[in-house]
Length: 268
Image (cartoon, rainbow, N blue to C red):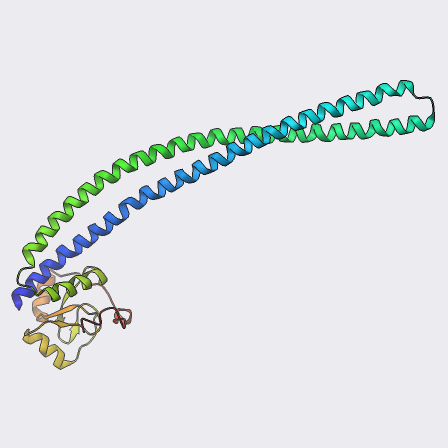
């Protein structure tokens, strides 16, 4: 069993690295996806701004026509002033001129505001075009970067899988399956020693009989609290190892490390 425990400790390091690299591989496309999403969103906004510019341009044409018509109407009313002969006609025509002037002023004001708005839109779309050029270049570069990184990471995974194959002979497949699950769910730490009565994975005190069973090493034992594989290690030997900087890092844990009802039910 000691040989198997030694293999598991070596395998733990390989699996932890492999799962870490696999997670990196899963994250690599996400950066590109984010940049592509930003670019696609920018293209959509660009189309909307173009449509807004076209709509504003059409509105400007209608306003200019309406303004021209209002000016002609006002001028015609003013010319009619020379032909009136009564006060009543004068007052009526004066009102027509006033209304035409007000309409003309209103249209001119609307026209100026619309021209200003069109100018702002054109400035915005020019800036947006520059931004899209930058985003397109970023997507292009990120695509190249992604391909290079994926190739590197896949080579790294292949190397780790070769190391894994060298360590797995002699270990029961069911134990390997469970061990991999533990590594994934316990931050890369799947096998830990017992010092005294304490699991060095979750630092929980274990029953004396259970510790004696682990110490005999006749079979695999899993911590009932953190689900890690357990092996016996003399505390004094462990202290000497620590002083020589050979300590295995064990994550701090507490009540939060207790096993969920379904998480590792097949391990206990």
